[in-house]
Image 1 (spheres, rainbow, N blue to C red):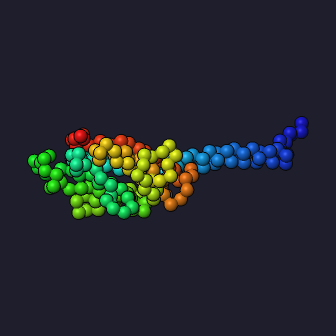
Image 2 (image 1 turned 60 degrees about the horizontal axis):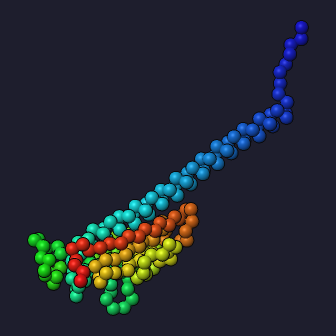
Image 3 (image 1 turned 180 degrees about the horizontal axis):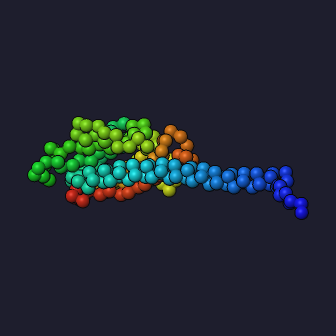
Length: 194
């Protein structure tokens, strides 16, 4: 009785190599897509967290703003020249002296290049370096072109603040360089308007 020999032909071997190549190609494509998506999402979250932190920081001091009709709590910065931000007067005295505005310092929020900075009495601190480098004294539109918007309203007792940031503000928006925009209206509750 003759022995039967089993062997694969060259065509079967080529078909097996092609199928394995397709499976590996699909696996690596999914892996590459997933990695890029995770990196893009991570960059978006970092920018979003930083802008949210800055708005919370600004909100904290605007809500402590003190002023009166003739001497408002919020004013433009600088007072003369090209506006790059705004200032809020706060009462940091213990105990508080609401009737005496002379001893209350101004806290300044301004844009310097891509950095949104705060001057807190004598110390300057960078709040974010992800802001697009333009300032506008208007309400932030639906499709913003600037990075820092600050419109003072209600006789200096409220401010509309908008921030637009990118992971790399010097580079155009892309999936690798996400852009985040947030805006809010902040009011000085302790500053009486007349």
